[in-house]
Image (tube, rainbow, N blue to C red; front, side, top):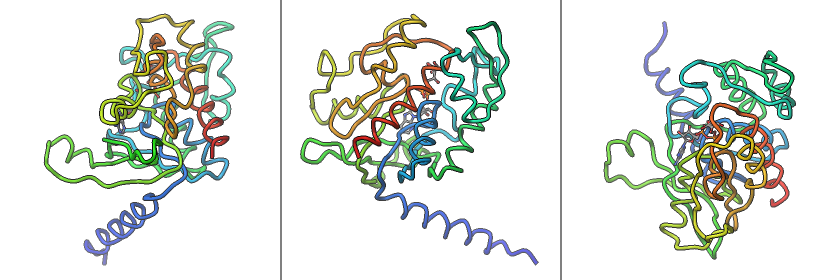
Length: 256
Ligand code: 48F
């Protein structure tokens, strides 16, 4: 006989164990879009204890939606190594542009990151950072439904050696640090410079330069990197996102 209580108990026990496991980790990633998932994979692959928090129910950020809802993404030649690493199928459009299924890419990035050992928790928002002795040392997390309901409920804290802001266009973690911590970032203005209008070629190049430690303990990747350092947007081409995720994993590993 299948037992309703056993099913609930199995989930509650595993869920609590998971929450307990992730209260102290090497690296926290805020945001499960293409750059955050890529970073999670490359860190976990090198045995770094990494947890990724995603506010939404689904993973992938802006990727599953492809371009204007057509479920395809474009990836330039220089980033094909990443699609190959994740076993994502792709077809050439011409010798420079390649097309992948946005849902397949999302699923494979997620599965490979989990297989490599990354812990991914959806429905959890990073609402603040832990700032001790002028260094970001973790994040403050709250369940998304509680956040959405606007209820006055205290959050939980996760300590880490490094935090990666992979929250995309909003660059939310970095903005929160500036707003609440009153700190000066490693940018030309000392604050979040803000995303510039579309310029694909420039955006896809500068995103790698902008992938860096923006404040002690806090790193930015993906669209958050361009938003923080004042780079332009690029639309549904994703090579820069994948390469930025890989690059931030490399930089963070070096810093640990
Ligand atoms: O926006 P998103 O996909 O970021 P990305 O990895 O990729 C950008 C592209 O999708 C696209 C683009 C293509 O070239 O420009 O926009 O830089 O994913 C960001 C994820 O972070 C989540 C959000 O729900 C999304 O899935 N997120 C945002 N704020 C928080 C968060 C937060 N405070 N805590 C947790 N997750």
